[in-house]
Length: 330
Ligand SMILES: N[C@@H](CCC(=O)N[C@@H](CS)C(=O)NCC(=O)O)C(=O)O
Image 1 (cartoon, rainbow, N blue to C red):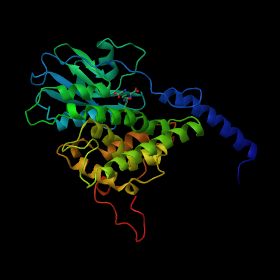
Image 2: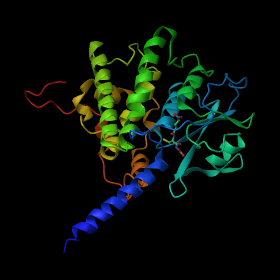
Image 3: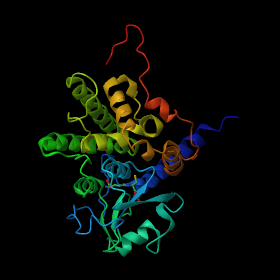
Image 4: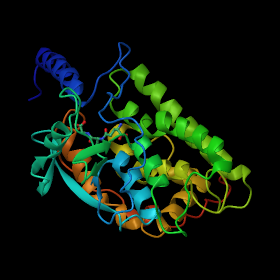
């Protein structure tokens, strides 16, 4: 027998109330219900450490599911920094809402311990990525936008790519600025919106930005190029990839970023395939962990915690499906 309407109505109101409360745990919102990412610790670009070239002198702390950590991991990998910077992968502890070390790191069991020991303001959250100096016993930077700049300036082999060559700096910074807000944070602004209007605004900005990327790749003529032209990807490509590679697996189904399937943006689809094929990139992709961590941990968005099946990553980084006869190419 169906429950009485008044019971359903009351249960909905109570759940809505609870939902708003729980969403506060994911992050703050403004009075229009727009998600506002909280400020973190260690946000400034530090000087290049004097011992940067020392083998294993520094440690890049990352989490597999985190797109902000992913951009740092990619920069580390593309520039071949393994001889001077070790990586440590932390695991999520959803019950406690924090990152923990698999084996104690510098005597710390959790990332928050390491943050406190490095002198972080106790009110800030302990986030990945973070770059730790073994000699200074200190986190140097944990804002990914600055961290990738530091890693790009890190001493590397002569053939390591410069991901922000001086001639392209202006174009790179225009793209980075837009992608950071509308795409990288944009998917979170969709998923963590508290009102329909806040979601609509974020969703429109997200797809406008993706369509602008598609148009820019088309304008470059023959396919095969990168976001700012040139023979090598730049930091603009690096920051786009972690969001795009999670799109069908996580952000479309969980955050509501599903208006245009990516195959409808064929240059972008091809760009993602080519970026994934770069040496070292596939080893930074963990689709099973992504889905487990997002669907399993973001309780207010997915209270059952059931991890739904998703497409195989290999099908997302292959060629696009052939266009149906008469279908538009864009
Ligand atoms: N501004 C930071 C954001 C990093 C961030 O939010 N990382 C998330 C994982 S995707 C995190 O560690 N969250 C833990 C927490 O908020 O407690 C950056 O870009 O580096």
